[in-house]
Image (cartoon, rainbow, N blue to C red; front, top):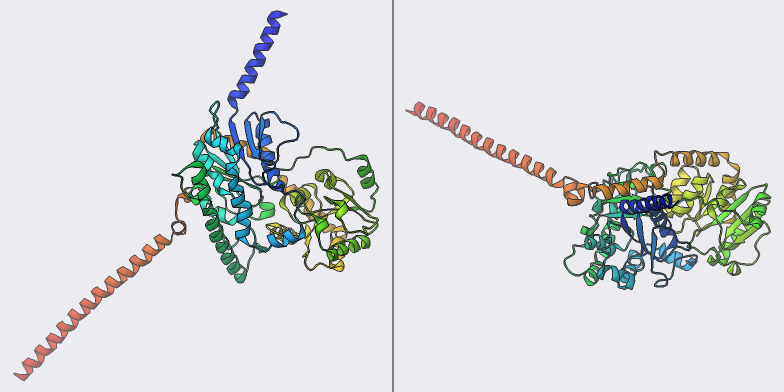
Length: 526
């Protein structure tokens, strides 16, 4: 027994040590305090941890249940978490398009977290046993955190929780043709007429200029906390080895990407096979005439909407009875009185399990990418009330594909809302289209999780080999304006020289002829 036991112990030790030696140590930096953004980042880091990598995750959202190989470095409490607390008034402020305000809240305020003991300790005492092999950071507005890659002297992978941002293409060396690639925060279609292309070019260039200006000011935080000698924010933005983008061509259209930009749309979706509470399951099972699910995500408080808007919602829900309505409301006690009898509210709901239920026929959403991807995953058509950011583009895109109906929350009426719900409930084309797109969206050679793991480990194996050489060129070099300018200048110079020579020859010939003519006249006079 003793030799057998000793052999078993040796085998276990060898297996454990082999797993440790194969795994990398990865630092994940996600300092934005918005839960909806962290969902995809958390899923990426948990997946890498499951593959045997040691991941240290800096965020405002520590795990409630520990996961092996996953260590939290919590920023919780430093900033108010954006969960079910964005009011209607704040929505209007955000949707105003004030980039300076946006960069202050999501950029400078986040960069100020570099003074937090957790982050400051890594800067002053980076781990050495073992050291970090890779940095993964969200690409959003706080670009000051890109300095960690240089500081730790390791490759850097970026994560965008939406389609790639307009200002990210240039530093990543990614081609972007504005003739058929509408700006991320526009509601323009892929097929644009002349005026739409003109609008697209102007809007995108203004957005890029403004963002680069405000993000460039974050260099002061880099100088303060990392020390002098670091390049500009823009230059550090060119140093990514790889970027994961939460998009897919079936929804976001055909776009050119370098090998260093990998689409992992739907990475955050995880069917945990949660069991619905008995009361809710019974209510859904009994919704034989169908049920509409209403949720504006993890950020927005529906209960804070104006009385007039909520009354329109209530009247519409009455109109579609006996169809039932299930609403996610953070604080039901703040909701306007008079909720119709066919409506049930909960402060939290397991969204995947709700959308998967056979009696859920439509999803009323604000158009956030995470929720709408889950709706597509489950094959449930939508009615969208886009509020800000990329939500307008998302819902407009879905409307063109006839998997959603778009409404304006500022001008919605009872009639418009009722018609929209009846359209997605009764027009079978919407259900057919979204089921078709769902199959297309998830028909891939690898799942989003496996794709993310493969390319992360690819960077760990090979280093910075996917980075586009275009990232080292100026914008006018990428557009070949210097080459075309040289060709034009050379052509004009050759033409000028040729004309100059021709003029000289013509003068010589003219003078020669004139001389001959004068000679003949002289002879005649003699």
